[in-house]
Length: 231
Image (cartoon, rainbow, N blue to C red; front, side, top):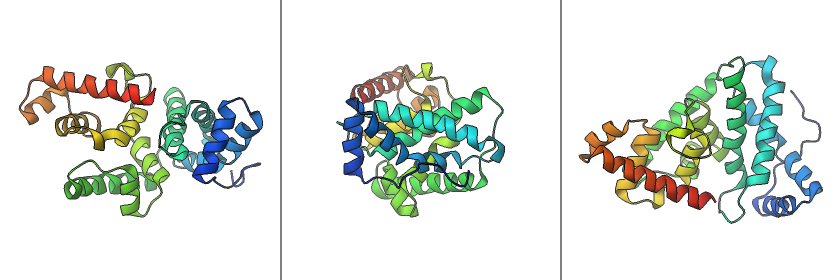
């Protein structure tokens, strides 16, 4: 996949939003242009997985995720389209890999993921809060898309029924990272331990000195806020 026919350079944020508004209003030409301007993003995400024999399939599956991102992006949110699209593209690829022959993760992605995790811990200590994706990207001199890919591509598959939400756990993590800085301290502690440190409710309760029921209530309240924010 050296070249992609019809691929165009990435759009600036303002123009991307104009195309999104037109596409969601039924303008097929704007939708096609928006897709073409993001084909290189799909290629970049798909390339994070080794296995050249599967690259064409992964690219096509990633394009499905891109189309879903175009159709479902909420223009009232301040998130950039590319940041929103990356976990959707990854989500489609991961579902494909789950249902078909697994493809090994690129070693470079493993390395970047380790750097991102370490950087997050350091920034959290410095800032006294969960750093945003853009802050981690700036610290590591990476793009937001590279950080998002590193954080989601290596995450284990999860049954989303565990959190009673309509998206995959990867999407939930990305969305939580966008709002976690606005949570109360106790909410932030619970969500960080549950979703990013992958601790059980019982472990979180013991760590914070509260009941498991209290942890469960905080978790439900935060996820309810998140679903409301995401529409």
